[in-house]
Amino acid sequence: LLTNRISKAGVNVVRAADGEDGLAKLRSEKPNLMLLDLILPKKSGFELLEEMRADPSLANTPVIIVSNLGQESDIKKGRELGAVEYFVKAKTSIDGLVERVKIVLSEQG
Image (cartoon, rainbow, N blue to C red; front, side):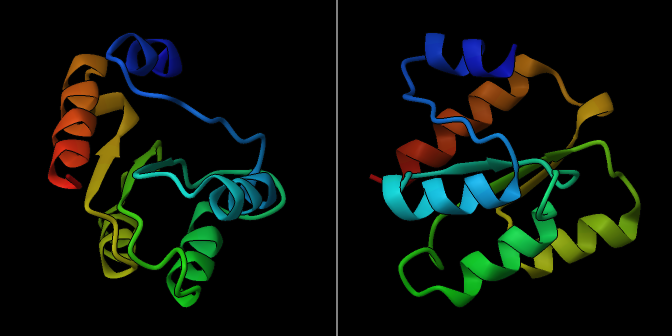
């Protein structure tokens, strides 16, 4: 649903099946923004984010976390790892998320 809504907003979307695939696609596609779930097979979202931040070619890619993990400690860790936003799925509207994606992309120039 999220992929379809973001695509309809005119944003090109590349999907990844798991954390390892996500990291590989980040390196090959060089996206302007990443939406990241934290609960992923093979490599968690936190692990992926840590590896991104350690890679100079990916370190400045903005990341919006969209996860079911809503504990304050998870949100704090996501922000400490450089996420520009953290949305808890159960508390987030698709429309609000799509609008935030458009704002972050417009800030990228």
